[in-house]
Length: 103
Image (cartoon, rainbow, N blue to C red; front, side, top):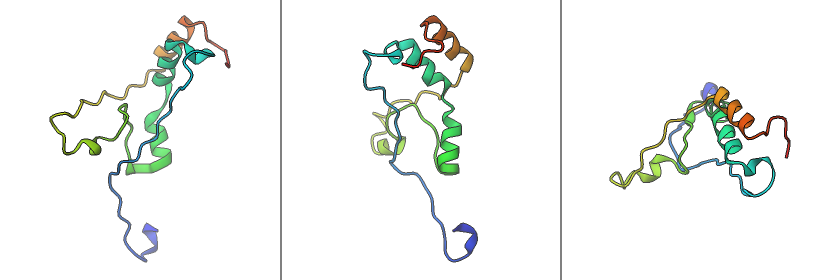
């Protein structure tokens, strides 16, 4: 669309989020908090966001976009830094005895 010259493309922040949620904490490999932590450390959030949305978004570890808190600056929590550490993830999986497990 942008290269067609037939109009103008506008893009900006919005309140959309995509969340991956483990809903059963009592069964399977994901019942172990270390495996869930490892999964969080291993996900390439920047790569996922870039592949899905290009330059129109950014990864975050908070449940909603900071634009939703715009009028509550005093109550706005500090967003934790997005951290990717595959080696730490591997160590956590090994500690949990979950290496190679599928369920």
